[in-house]
Amino acid sequence: MSFDFDRVVPRADTASVKWDARPGYFGSADVLPMWVADMDFAAPDEVVQALAARAAHPVYGYTLYPDGLFDTLAGWLHQRHGWTIERDWVLWAPGVVPSLFAAVQAFAGPGEGVVLQPPVYHPFFSAITDTGRVIVENPLRLADGRYAMDLDHLERCAAAGARLLLLCSPHNPVGRVWRPDELRAVLDIARRHDMTVLSDEIHHDLVYPGERHHLLATLAGDPSGIVTAVAPSKTFNIPGLGLSALVVPDPERRAALKRVFGQLHVSASNPFSVAAFETAYRVGAPWLDALMAYLAGTRDFVLDFVDRRLPGIRAIRPEGTYLVWLDCRGLGLDDRALADFFVRTARVGMNPGHTFGRGGSGFMRLNVGAPRAVVAEALERIAAAVAGR
Image 1 (cartoon, rainbow, N blue to C red):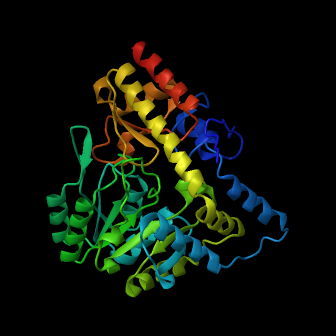
Image 2: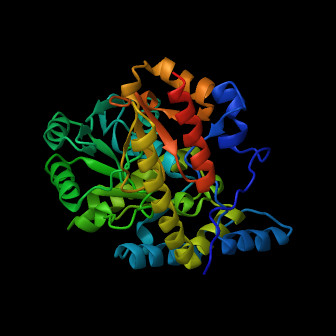
């Protein structure tokens, strides 16, 4: 099968956050948006056709979670990741970010500690602070161009009474695909200290050739202390449809999450999210395989370009995701000046690294999930700006 990831799909004036929020976020529409973590590729044709077919039925009423929803999720996790799940383990959710908030409220009381590993996706922070819990930072360590967990420090965080770890796997923004030995060490620490782990694995399918993602629960002899968040949204570029799954083997933890969602009367289901979810997981594998081959080429292009033509900037080689973490500390700019440089001088819109917490100062997050010509244009703009300093 042939897939055209070089095709540019215009997204302006579609109520796109990535494109249409530029004036509000960057102060100008004259930036090339390489920020919000969705891709500029069209979703698989079969998903588009399934949505069109559902739209052709003129009634859009309250929607059940059909059996096919679980079947396609279970089939995908078994075939792609070797994990066999049971039907009653699954809770449907309106997205992974709401699931973070729910997990914090379910597994940590007000004033109790929740561990995160910065630099990390910024809603991890707000999920803790906005619900009256306490952030416990277990910063990642950067050495020789690669990030690692500080496991000794994580042990101390857990021993001090932290109730929950929010794990990002693969990690956004640094692009690590955690090794089995790293994940087993996390499991051992969590088990020793009765600490629940919410494993955000939304990028679990976006792993480059030569790497392998290991679902945390598959490495645990007893997965009862793990809550796994997954979705087809990043994989197939359908995040605006807002349906995800929490896989929760332990009935007590499942009940705790149900109580939180129940207090808000949250329903994740609508006719279009169900149609897209089922179709993507049922027939999307060839599209995904082609996507990852394309993204691997783009990643290597970006790494080479940064190395050759962007003095003062280093790219951290991502093992997964379509995000590249740029170390811009060599430019000698503080965070405000750095953001201003990229927006006003380079006219490229990225996520400032300091928004990802400790260790993010001096970095920028570049989204390369776009046709390669668009990525090249962004890099050329940056190169011109750097050369003109």
